[in-house]
Image (tube, rainbow, N blue to C red; front, side):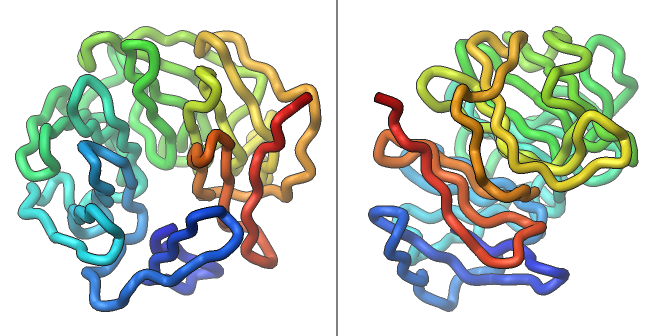
Length: 256
């Protein structure tokens, strides 16, 4: 768990756990963890992209600041995913829908320029993206004040297909997306079926990226946005997030 913000107070600490219960603070002295950055695991290392820099670590203790392009390092509220042996960075800031990729976190190529949403998704921030089943996916986000709940996919990073225009999980941004049990999951966020919005604590999953449903057993997890979600020890873990009164960690329970 790296950095973040709580009630406008920024954190620059890092924490790790071997079981999700007992947590150890990472050594201090690392470069700042940027606000609005995106994290991915790639080639055995953890990369933190954007928010002022591009950082890399192989053990969580020693961090290297990579000499990445300013267009990537300075970006905030974008999404990042690993797909086709590259790190992909999509959208972010205000009014962006460009796409970049890198084989190492240092050398970046602009794959698609920022521009009109013709044959692809609109500008957006605080969305999510994942590489799944030979495609790169983009879900929801904030389009300069308009919350989206569409789903897009691509097989080459250039030509995009709108898989869903209006999903049943409603408009949302600042959610998390993760792959678990060969399904695509959407967790929490801010939004809902109305434009007014609220902090959400629901979970949705899809077997194909088009048809979405909630788990049979309803979660009692409090609503949260900008939470962390990961698969660890064969379970889905959800940690922290904005909108909470106290920090917490939730884990999926195997069904009999």
